[in-house]
Amino acid sequence: MDTEGRSGKKKDRKTEREYIENVSIRGLGGRFVVDYSDRKRVEGEGALAVPCRMVRSFPIADLDVKDNFSVYCR
Image 1 (cartoon, rainbow, N blue to C red):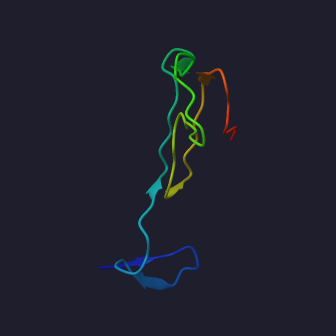
Image 2: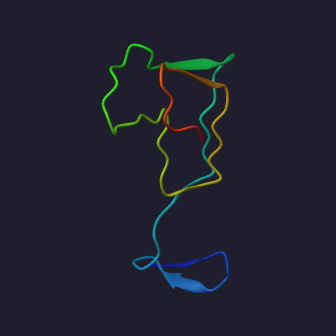
Image 3: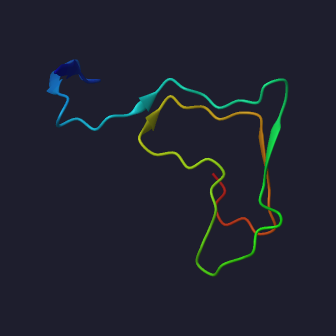
């Protein structure tokens, strides 16, 4: 199966990496909380509330993260 990339050129889908596109994560009726405040600290380990890979046009809104030691702030 062929698909058009951003350049408008046709690409073979087998060689193009697939992305999740045009999706959002939002709070229904207000904000929502991811609570890591009781998580034990592990040296060299971090935590991501919403890990995202291979996404395009993927907004995340209305999110509060509670934790005691932020490692990643994105």
